[in-house]
Length: 131
Image (cartoon, rainbow, N blue to C red; front, side, top):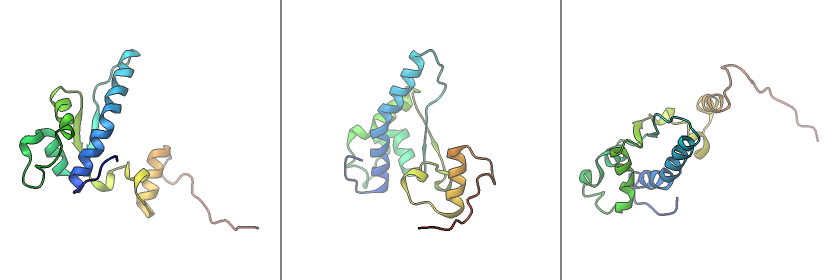
């Protein structure tokens, strides 16, 4: 992200604001190529962020008053049916695979989803290092 944040909610809003233009550009590019794009879905795991994105500045309270108005561009896109915001539990947030240290079962689950592997496929055996 390009700016500092005082809270997780503000950081999430900054992240969406940073990437939303690329999402809209991709949608319009695909449509200009003749493809039909039904929905642009942005998944969030922070319910405070979802409320702010859907309601805009109207749902700001004491702790969110200082948020820059530019962070609410996504609210306009939601009102224009360009984007839909949906809740995704943190344990199912596949983007975490690319941004956070994920280990164990969660790592294997996300790796299988990202690489389109079947369950149980591609078991890595222990190997000896020779050298």
